[in-house]
Image (cartoon, rainbow, N blue to C red):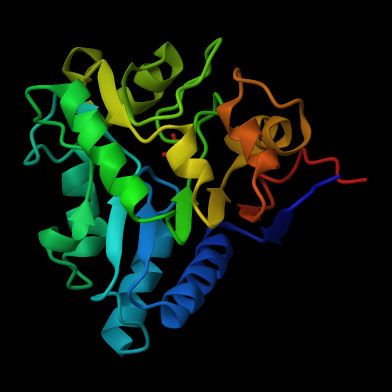
Length: 248
Ligand code: PGA
C-alpha cells in the first residue's frame, strides 16, 4: 500500500513529462515567488522542455522563483558541459529567464568542499523547506547523490560516488578517467524538508528500484525508500518504470 504517495502512471516518457510539468507549473502559479528544487539527469529533461514551452507561450512565469539544485560533481568547472551548473543553465534556467542570482547549486569549483556544503545547507534551511523538490531515482535507489550505504547523511555533504553511479554516468564524460569521483549533495534532511516531493521515473531499468523504493522496506541501502516517510510525495512514472509495482 502506498501511504502519503500519489502515484500517476502515464503511457510513456512524453506523457510522464507532461504530467510532471503540469503539476509543477500549477504549483508555481500558486506561489510564483516560492523556492523550487530541481534535479539533473536524463529523466527531467522532457519536463524542462515543456516548462520552457509554457514560458514561451506566456502561460508560466518562472522569473520570480528561487531555484535550488540537489547536487553537483566535485571537482568540476562550471563551464564543463557535464557540470550540473551547465546542465541547468542549458536545459532550463537560461531559457526561462532565471538569472544566476536566483539559482543555487553546490559549487563544483569550491576549494573547500566541506565549507561549501555547510554554506549550501544554510541556504536550503533558510528557505524553510523547498515548495516542490523534483527528484529522479538512480538505478541503485539514490536520490541526489545520497548513495546506498550503512548510514545516510542529513546535511549537505561531500560524498564519494558509488561504483554504480560512476559506471552509469561515465558515458556522459566520454571515459571513466574523466568522470569525477566525488560530489556535493543535498542530504536527506534537505530533501525530506521539502513540502512536496515530485519523483519522476521512466523506463524499464527503473522498475525494480521504483518498486523497492515505494513498497519495500525503508532502508539506507535504498535511500529513496525514505520517501515513504514523507507526508506529500507525488510519483509520476511511465508504464515501463511502474511495471513491477504490486499495488494490491
Ligand atoms: P537519470 O538519473 O534521470 O539520468 O536516470 C536519475 C538519478 O540518477 O537520480
